[in-house]
Amino acid sequence: MTATLPEVPALPSHCDVLVVGAGPSGSACAQMLARGGLDVVLVDAQAFPRDKVCGDGLIPDAHAALQRLGVLGEVMAAAQPVGHVACIGPRGGRIDVPGELAVLPRRQLDDIVCRAAVKAGARLFAPARFEAPIEEDGRVVGARLKVNGALHELRARWVVLATGAVPQALIAAGVCERRTPSAVALRAYVKNDAMADRITEMEVVWHRELRNGYGWIFPCGNGVFNVGAGIVHSRGVDRKGLADANLRHLFDAFTRIHAPAHALMQGGTVVGELKGAPLRCSLNGARYSRPGLLVTGEAAGSTYSFTGEGIGKALETGLLAAESLLQGERQPRSEADTRAAYETGLRGLKPRFDLYEKANKINAHPWLADLVIWRAQRSPRLLKRVSGLLNETSNPGHLLTLKGLSRLFLE
Ligand SMILES: Cc1cc2nc3c(=O)[nH]c(=O)nc-3n(C[C@H](O)[C@H](O)[C@H](O)COP(=O)(O)OP(=O)(O)OC[C@H]3O[C@@H](n4cnc5c(N)ncnc54)[C@H](O)[C@@H]3O)c2cc1C
Image 1 (tube, rainbow, N blue to C red):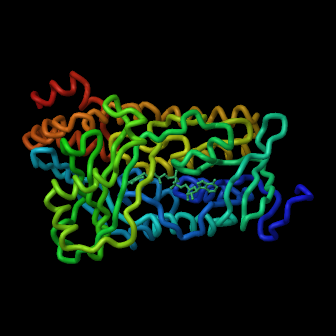
Image 2 (image 1 turned 135 degrees about the vertical axis):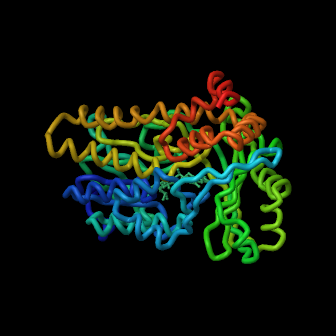
Image 3 (image 1 turned 180 degrees about the horizontal axis):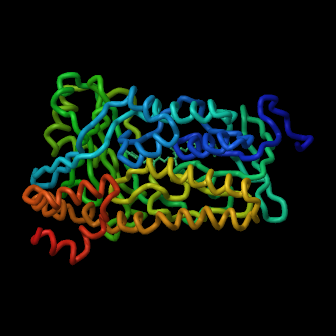
């Protein structure tokens, strides 16, 4: 502890692993590490429970990871279960893609996952903001945390950065390769009891006026809906285009052109503020590790391009980081080997992320959504493949290659 810094009594000065960020990724990692017997400190810049701007949709990969964390039952008791994602094209065509789905506002979801980490033995300190790493000979050996305006030094054998899509912590830790996001999106909660029986599925809508992105309505239960729209970086929209995007215009366009969204807004009440946020996708934009530090979750770009879904992969990559560290404990190996094991695990997921990047063509050319929907309405096999995409049992890229497009007419 540096003598000039005021001491923050509650925070320890040492631990085995400091996990920064108590979103899905950090909390999943902290739980697994604590279950493995390590002394884990979990910090977050915000007091919990906290809101997180999101669509709140839980797709099958999230269900699987929540199951591994032992919290799926608690999550589903609070969530709105959903049977399908309705994909709606510019001409109004619709397919209902089945899957294990649910909607739960992140304030509740993240609180459940974070509490499970604490129950497993992780010590939570929030609000406590990561300001900078402590470094010795180029290795990260802890962090400087700001708590109640005072700096506190916490030494750790490992630091895991799970700070989400805002790049400041990545920059401070020297692992940021790109400051700009991959996508930006805005959402509102709308209360409209009269629509509770009319919108019971997750609706995703492509339209010329939402080009390079899409709009959504996800039912949260009790007559509350998460309504939003966003745009994703692609050849058609450079990163400057993202920075300049007027999300409020996009949201207004969505609630004008999609009749159910229009009805929701007309007869409903917006609860709280409309809020926008960045996304980091495709496992790009940051180094996955440096000596003494692993980067996980959306900080490492673990959100899918095209769909913007990232809760499941944030949980999974957090678990991957924990597994790599625990294996290093069980079969003592060099730190470089532990980092290499983690990076290899992340790279193993990369082809899937690359295919979602390709599928992003649908956002750039919404007429492609019409084509896929039109064919899927006529082909049970194709509908099965689209559902395999959602359930991670089939390869999304094949739908978007030349060969895949020509097969659309043969199936
Ligand atoms: C509008 C929108 C809609 C989305 N819809 C969906 C959806 O429907 N389904 C889906 O699966 N995904 C969706 N996503 C993506 C999803 O929100 C992310 O993939 C997910 O939150 C990533 O989890 P994470 O744990 O990596 O990061 P986060 O959930 O962002 O958690 C990071 C945590 O780190 C903390 N933190 C940040 N900096 C610091 C610091 N310096 N010191 C300490 N703590 C810090 C933050 O306070 C935060 O609690 C959406 C995203 C947006 C923006």
